[in-house]
Length: 114
Image (cartoon, rainbow, N blue to C red):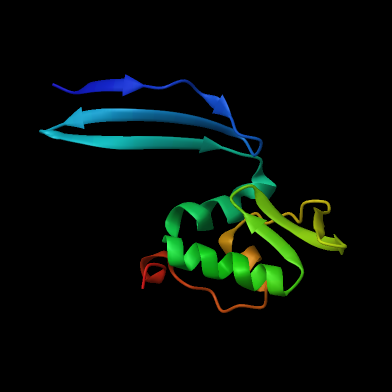
């Protein structure tokens, strides 16, 4: 028998999130469903398939090149004094788009925690 617990769907600014927990064959598993606009799919996928170190490295590299990268998207940034201002979202329909825009070699998800 499979039991499940669901948490409310929330809008986190970059789309909606469904959080759930299921119990199957003696194990609890967390289930997250993210619903986002197509142009945000690449950064969101990188965020959820990369480890902490990998994601931090991607954000640092993006910042060096004048961008802000997070799970909501990739944005060019301008600095006014000590303040960063993100400009209009750069559409990234795939992970490859993010790597291409940043001029980085694509890294397969299975190698993102190394």
